[in-house]
Length: 266
Ligand code: MLT
Image (cartoon, rainbow, N blue to C red; front, side, top):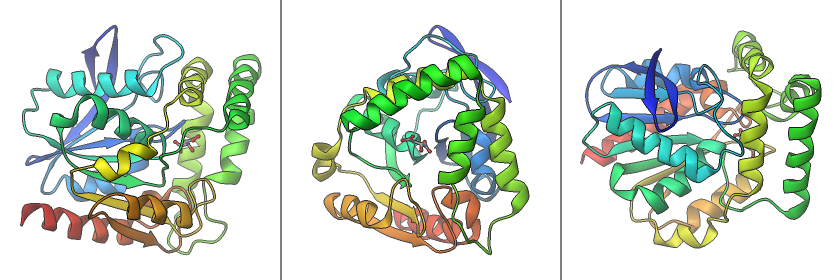
């Protein structure tokens, strides 16, 4: 990983491969390593850029709350710092999808296409926002364990024959190692994020929507409706997978990605 100065901080970023640029934006409270199978696969034909977002993974904590706008501005500055001139194919999972809405609003010229994995367009309900604020307080007091436990219940398909146990344990360790201040800052940022539903019919980019069949955080019915609201979007339902579809069923996700990437090139 390389540390790149961005705004008032630095972002840790993994770069691999050569070719058209692909930006991989992880979920919460994770890091770039959740994309390990896509990094390997896409780097054969693309320049893969996989950062850790501000305050998460190996990127230092800087400020709180960290809004989705701030994360998006960081990514645009990162692309500039790395000398990326071509628009990127943006892959975002969950919070990475929330940040995609702000990339569309603020940095549309940076984007060539979008892959939205296990995410949603709606803002938090007042109750969900309050629960996030409470969780932020809890982890600042007690450390990451309560959040690590909560995510263990929600991220994964109850049954998957394609997932490796070591991948599940790795992600749970990433969560446990996260700086509570970084996680709390992102929780407070997500709690105040804008609704993006009105944006969907106006998206003028190629879009692939990917959803784990057993995702309880962004369920298939909701994601399919989101895909229907985006002109021309493709929808891929991934078997044997929950919220972490790219890691739980990489063969299927990568096959759908290949088809999408080919359609971009034609
Ligand atoms: C994520 O995976 O990024 C989180 O589930 C997002 C969220 O808490 O809404």
